[in-house]
Length: 258
Ligand code: NDP
Image (cartoon, rainbow, N blue to C red):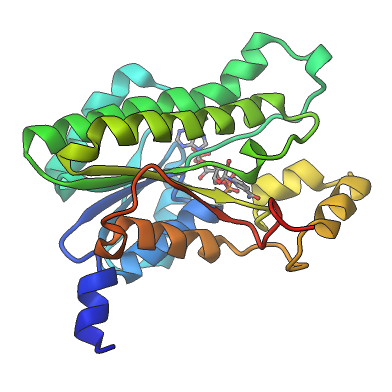
């Protein structure tokens, strides 16, 4: 295959991409993969210093936008400002995430909301802003949600996280059906266990949990953030133009193997 065909098929040239939570971990790797594929990438999160450092590392003219996805009322203005400065967002990666490890019986709904608000409510509202502009400007777009293998296998002590990620699969099904005929594809990537801060928080000081996790990954290693990044770049590219409403598991076979 010539590099021209590769670039037309997998390239993201001329597209503006927004990656929430793009300042660290998986989001930073996603941003880097999109930028290497030619997109104009904007990374968003709450900490300006973290975003600036990540943008420098990513290079390729990566830009930053400070926003909190749980500040629902502020999201329309935040999206409009990004579109004005960097172009209409044609690729959105809803990656921002948090987690809370706590026994169910000791938790309350505030604990639940803290996780659900980031993964589901914030991602939904930001998607609505992006979709409205794409429809108004009659443009095509690609929105990817970062789900989790946790949506497929039960894991103890993280019920808010598990429920949120499972809800995301429903969001993908519903929105992909609603916008399929209007040129906006909605998909997801479900990472298995990836070596990042969130993973370390969930397993540090809990050796049996860590051993159990490692013992059930057929490929016998944790994933790397770039494994998720390239899956997102593919889903956002012309190569995936007929893929809609899907969630790709990138998990070393963890959810299906033994
Ligand atoms: P990190 O904790 O490294 O990154 C989370 C990012 O989200 C941070 O950059 C953070 O930036 C941002 N963020 C958190 N809350 C908000 C908010 N309210 N508004 C805007 N940005 C926010 O986690 P990972 O990189 O590991 O996780 C990324 C995604 O991948 C998450 O959705 C996670 O659930 C998912 N995932 C991760 C797995 C793993 O093994 N690591 C496995 C499966 C799924 P800031 O604090 O500056 O706002």
